[in-house]
Image (cartoon, rainbow, N blue to C red; front, side, top):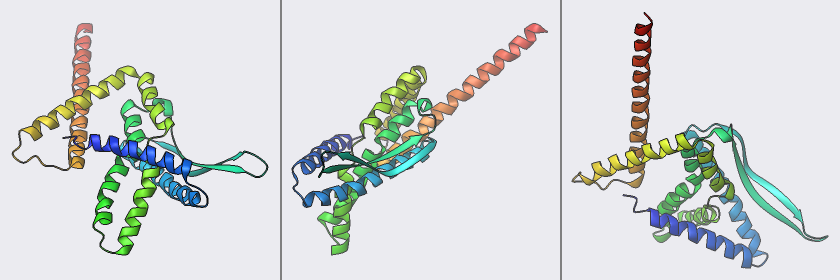
Length: 231
C-alpha cells in the first residue's frame, strides 16, 4: 500500500531536473522543440487540474490552458514564457483537501499516464505507438511538477479554516487506517493503487456523513429536550 510514493517523488525530482537542464543548456533552434513540448505539457497539466476540480466538486471560475507572457530584454530579443491558469470560485473558501488534491493532481495523473505509456516505449507495438507515447511522456514530464501557486494554496487553505482542515485530516487518517486494516487481513490484497485510492475516498465519505448524521441526531435530541423543558 502506497509503494508508489517513492517512485512519484523520484518522478517529480527527475521532471524538475530534466526540464531545468534542457531549458538552460539546449541551444537554438533545438530549444524551440523543447518549448513546443512544454506547451503541450502545460495544457495537459491544466486539464488534470480541471479533472480533479470536477472530482472534488471544486467550482471553477476561469480556465486558461495557455497564457503567453512577453518580456522585452532588449531591442532585438524578446523572451516568451508560457503558463496555464485555473481560477476557482471563492478561492479563500476551498477546503484543505480540495486544495491538496487539485494542486497535486497533475503530478499524480502524470505519473500514472507515464507509467502506462512506458510499456509502449519499451515494448513498442509499432512506430506510431512508440513515437506518440514517447512524445506524450516527454510533454508531461516537462510540466508534471506542481507550480508555486499550487503549493501555496495548500497551506493557505489550511490557515483559512484550521479546525475543519484538521477534521479532514483526521477523517483521511481514519479512512487510510480502515483500508489498510482490510487489505492486511485479506488473503488476496494485490489491488491496483487506483482501486485503493477509491476505497479511501469511499470510506472518507462514509466517515464524513456518519459524523454529520450523528451531529444532526444530537442536535435533534437537544432541541427536543429544550422544547420539553419549556412546556
